[in-house]
Image 1 (tube, rainbow, N blue to C red):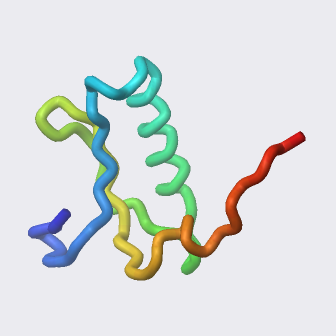
Image 2 (cartoon, rainbow, N blue to C red):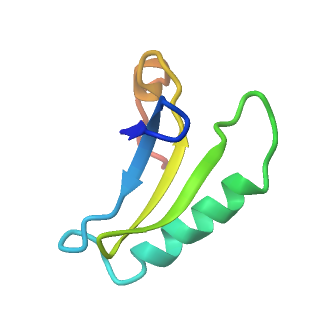
Length: 79
């Protein structure tokens, strides 16, 4: 997504109401509050949060590079 005020790209997490379970909006709000409370160069910054056309969202600092899943080993069984 593009932030007009910052004139920079941002990572936008936007809930799809049709796919989200009833607790998804509260989990996203908790995630936003948790990220907002952190201040570390290795953690993305929360830039904004709220509702967009009735859908909850958080806007985060965009980190360029390979997806994290490409850097982590595949998860095996937890037995």
